Length: 311
Image (tube, rainbow, N blue to C red; front, side, top):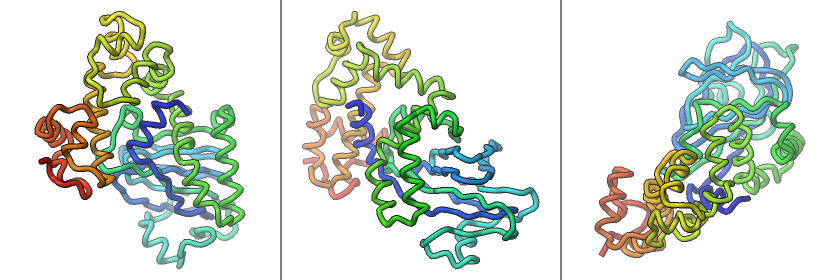
C-alpha cells in the first residue's frame, strides 16, 4: 500500500467490526440506527434488497454488490413494499438472535432469502482526511466493478467463504484486512466520485506524490511551500496550483490539518504530554498548538486520552 494511504489509515485509527450475516425473507424493513465515526458496509452474496438513506437515496443491492454508508448514517434494509419498519435491536429481540450463525428475519419462509454480510469501518472520534470527507452519503459498488478490481474481489470472496462457513477466524480476517479492504472500496468508489479519483491521482502523481509523502513522513518539519515544491521538482507557483487542484486544499492548509490529525492520534494514544506532541507535529509552542487544536476540534488537547495539560 502507498505510504501516504497507510499513514492516513494509521492516523485515523481504522478498525473493522463484523456484525452478522443475514437470511432475510421478504417483506421486511429493518432500520439500522445512526452510529458516530463509522462507515457501515453490506456485502450481498445472494438475493436482493434495497438500502434506503434518510436523504431519499435508494440503492438496489443485487447479488455480488457492495454498499458503503459513510458517516454512521441511519438507513433501512428492505425488500417488499408492505413491511412495517422495525428497529434493528427490536428485530434481534423478536428473533432471539444472539450473534451466532445467520440473523434470520422475515415473514415468508418460502421466499428466497437475502444473504448479506454486514459490518463497519470505525475511525477515531474527530479523525478526518479528504479521503473520508469526499465520500457521498452512500457508495454502491456493483458486482461487475468489484470483479474488475482483483484485490477487492479476492478479499470479498475470502470474507464470504469464512463467514458463511462459520469460520471462527472470520472476525480476525476482517481486522487484518481492514486497511486494504477500505482502500480498495475507495478506489472502486472513485469511479463515481470524480473528486475522489482526483485525490488518488494526486497521491500517485510522480511530483505531488513526493511532496505528500514528505509531509506524511515528517509532519513536524518546518515545511514551506518552496521546500515542498522542491520535493515535487516543480516551481512554487505551479506546485501550489496543482496541489490545490488535485487535493482540494492549499499545501499549507493540508499540512496544518494533518499536523492536527497526527496530534489527535498521539494524544489519544495517551503516552505523551501535550508539550511533546506539539513539538512532534511542528508547533513551536504548546500554546499555539492548543489554540489551533481547540479551534479545530472544539476541545482542548489536554482533554484527549490520558495526556496531561501543556507545561
